[in-house]
Image 1 (cartoon, rainbow, N blue to C red):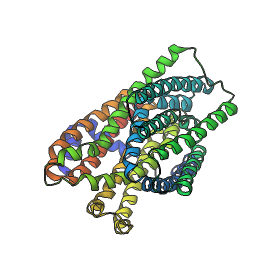
Image 2 (image 1 turned 90 degrees about the vertical axis):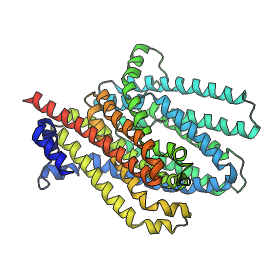
Image 3 (image 1 turned 30 degrees about the vertical axis):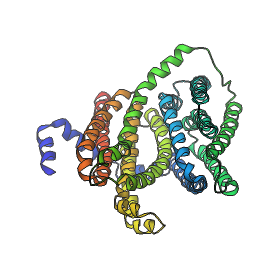
Image 4 (image 1 turned 45 degrees about the horizontal axis):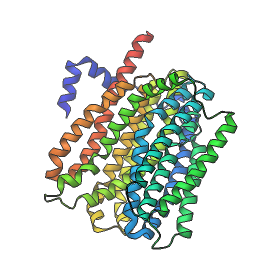
Length: 451
């Protein structure tokens, strides 16, 4: 491993500059370093993560109890909700990132941007929801199946009209976390108090859709009153078109990243069903579910950081050193957290997991570390997005995705679960390294322009 680094530094001056540039960090004994931890970012980050951890814990308890009450119908509920989430992700079209970036940079006024994004999403999700509903009603399904998939349509529309991007752009993520945690508590309490074994198929999705829908309506009403907005706006369609074009690169990057992080779960069953690792899908799905739960919390921490990155670009002279410091802090937190998780795996196993989970438990900490690396990559990506280098971020994701996909088909049939886990982590590290090179290239470019 040492020889390639020596070769790069001896024969490739740019690679050497990237390596040296990464080592130019603030002095830990200066007031400047300590000032990083006294600002708004760390306070918001701490509150957001604490609220999200509490909310996710209660949500997990409630959802697990609801699935137990559903019995044999639990698989149908999860499948319908998975479709709703997948369609919601596809239909975002990068507009969330566009909105947050403009609000944080103050390049478009809040009163102009929010109504246009709100109206566009209302039309998109309303039309798709209507088409999906008509398809369900004309598909000849049973009454219970129809009710299940109609609940999925409701969840799609509610998820699509999510208001997180408004709070993120306004740098009020702790307030959003309070709302979301309260919603999770209400849903879980309903499950635990009113659900009984043998509950009707799709009942959990109806409860989630209705409660979240009511919260969404009240929250948009609050946004309308607080900021004195007219939410519906049907003029200036040319500017809305520009937002869609601007968001296209971010949308493509999101697709690449989701493929990179989920390719193991997608392919492990097909690639191992006829070999000696035919039962490896089940243990991998269990540790992947735990790592995804960690990611769902880290995502909200990232939402706090990403907005501040855009603000730093316009307000701070130490923009690049701040992002480097935050990135290293995330990696350090990942190493500490995953080391602890590796030591505590016996305690996790003793909570009553199946034998298949025991088989996969030693690899759980590696998958979780991969989620931390994903967050570190996200920080570097937003470092590029603040300079409108959206397509550079997309280029950073192409090679890791293609290489990871090729290696999955090559190695997973031979090594099963172990190969899937380490290819997942390797893909995240590969993306991080590509983003790091691009970020340091941007830093060197800006340094030359300022001299």
